[in-house]
Image (cartoon, rainbow, N blue to C red; front, side):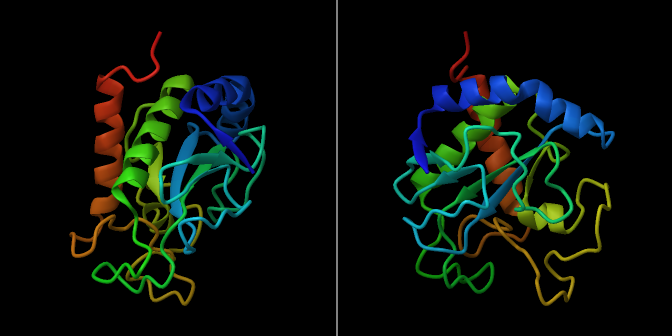
Length: 193
C-alpha cells in the first residue's frame, strides 16, 4: 500500500485512461467507479480495492495501475475502479452503522477522489458511472450483470455498502450524497488546469 495525493491519483487515472476505456467499451459501457466500505476498522487496508481511504481521510492505493483487475464488485470489475472507505466493521443496518461508521473526513475525501478520477477519465458523475456497492448489487444502472444481491434481495451475501453514509438516513441516500458532494467539488474546479 502506498499513500497518495489527489494529484497522484489524477496522474494514475490519466495513465490508465485508454486501458480502462478499452476494457469498458469491450462491454459496451462507460468506465465505472464503484464505492465500497471494507467492513473493517479505520486503519485496516485491504488489497481488494484500487483506492482506500482511512478514518482520518488519508488516501492509499493498492496498485500502480488503476486498470488492474480487482475483485471488489461482483461481475462488474472490468473497466472499473473500486474505491473503499476503511470503515463499516460491525455495521448491522442503515440505523446501526456500528462503532466504525464513515467519518465526515472520509466522505469528503471520497467525494474529492471521485471528482478527480471522473475529471481525468472524462466521466459524468451520475448513477450510471459512479455507484455504491449497494446500488451495483441491486443493478440500479439497469445493466443486470448478475442476480440481485443488494438490500431487500434476501441474498445471504447481501451487499449494502454505502446504502446510507450516516445512521438513520433514508435507504438509498448514500450514493446520491456522494455523487452530489463530488459534483460540488467539480464545481470548485478541484485540480483543474
